[in-house]
Length: 177
Image (tube, rainbow, N blue to C red; front, side, top):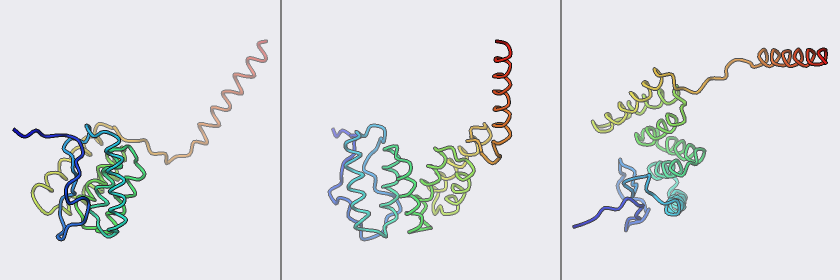
């Protein structure tokens, strides 16, 4: 009886590009939460090298972005996913994973826009179902009010009020003594 492992396993063909393009990123793990950090670092290094060898491969950069996100390196993940979208703007998975990263960072407005774009890029029922499920989660969070606050207004008035309050308390304390 064969047993299934949840750790990263490098495939025999390595990270070399395939002759025909694949619609699915080649991720060699089943459970991303069970990957040891050493294996993840090794996989990120090999993906970085593969991306350097294949600069026009959007799927490889999407995998690199996912691996960086699993390693809690948000900026590198976002950079890799943005590069993948730039290389191949019609790549569904690059778009979906970019919008998922925005969703996980609670940038709900942008996540909704990017997920809607991924929905437009879906080419089959499975991709359509993935994008719809993510869009419904984004909208659910919007209704619950779990969005990051927007800092669109100046904080000058509250800061001045706080300063005046501190000055007033200091003056009262000095007069009281």
